[in-house]
Structures are given as C-alpha cells and as structure tokens.
Amino acid sequence: MIVDLDTMRFEPIPNPSQNAAHGAGIQAARTIAGADVQVVLTGNIGPNAYQALSAAGIKIVTGVAGTVREVVRRYKEGELKEASSPSVGGHFGVGRGRGVGRGCQ
Image (cartoon, rainbow, N blue to C red; front, side):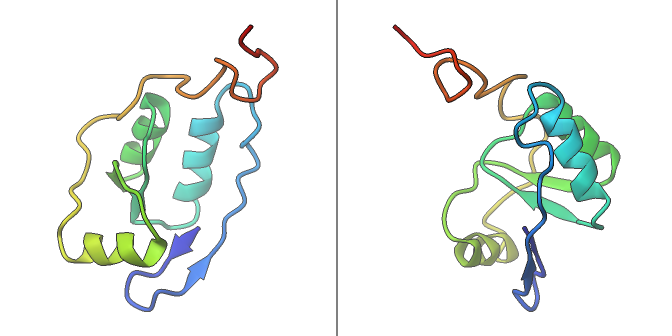
C-alpha cells in the first residue's frame, strides 16, 4: 500500500509475485520502485529486496509494527530510523510448514 505521509491518502498496490517460489522480494521491490515510492516501512526485509530498493534510492525502515496511522506518525516524528542492512536472511519465511506443502511431522 502506498501512503501519502502528508495527507494519509493511500493506494493499495497488488503484489503479483506474492506466491512466487523465488524472486518474490526482487519483483515486489521493482513494483514499489515503479510506483515512485520514497520510503518503505516494513517489519522485515531480505537481502535481495533490500538491494533492489536501495539501488532505486528508496529508504527502508524495518522493525515496524502497528497500524498504518501509528507507524506513519512514528516515522514522521523521527522515532523510526532507516535500516543500513537487510533484517533477515534470504528465503526467510519459506518452508518450515508455513503453507508451502512441507508440513512438519
């Protein structure tokens, strides 16, 4: 979702790569970069998406949780700081029984 930080207007952005087995982070980053985004506020980001967004000149803030309104307020008040590296390793969240057909037994 794109949020205008001044007006709080938002626009959802579909992620056509959300179910991709590989390259989902890079494809999502390309979609975001093509939408003229200036900053990404997220919980976690992997190395490929981090690199793609950084290369596009997009600021990345990780460790974010809460409502959109609360997160934007915290960012605008300077409580959230830009990330200097990915927050998780590659393929974070893939497998290990998380809905991809590899249940734990």
